[in-house]
Length: 290
Image 1 (cartoon, helix red, strand yellow):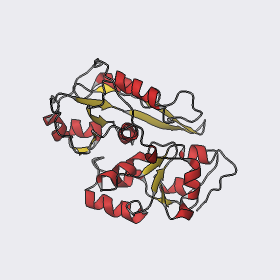
Image 2: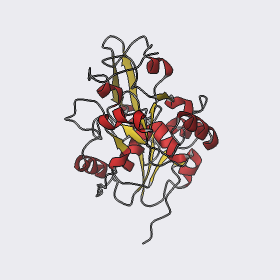
Image 3: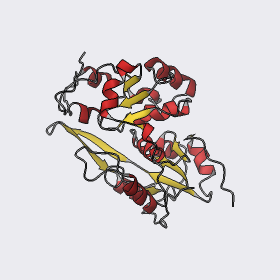
Image 4: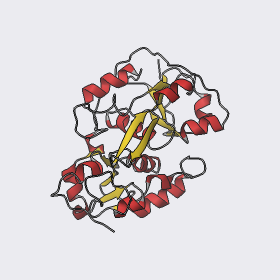
């Protein structure tokens, strides 16, 4: 039996609705709330399982990116899990080697984080719902409540290490002619934010700044037209011929410009998973301010 053609990487709500009953399709809800706790001086990430139970796209399965799809032994939150753990966890979500996956969330870069994790482990048939759950609701499309139970599937990981940048590679990147892009807001990039959730303020030397949400339409949360994204990505250096790496605070926001670059025709942008959480924890790693 021949599988259906792969869906495009960026899918509108109406396009997803049209194929929702397609055999072999799995929709994953990665909704997560990320809140800065000023008292603790750190971000707290909470999977939005209760909101999923209240309303989600019909047939969607909840994916816990914070716990299940991260390394539980790592010191840093959201650290990429090993291939075996990842394969086991996505298998429980009903994702197999030939599954067509569509990921969505209720904001932020959690959907692109899951897209990147799946692609990092070798799955090509992954799409992102443009505008997330808000776009689905705005289109007046049906929702359902409760949890969705699916049969486990077998996923065989085929890691793509070139999509995961290490701290030592990042340190050498600017001097080697590569491109390093910080996906956080300008105040954080300059080290001027009122509350700093990282061990030290500042950015990795040699970084350009491309806030991840600048690639989205502020009114709808949908991605900007490809030509507009390409202009922003190109100005930051991400579409050039050399090695390109994105980073943020903990490897979440950085996946959104990496996904945008994929849509714009550069599929090999890597993510520095440790990002500022790892970099600024090492006093021997320099930072830039201003």
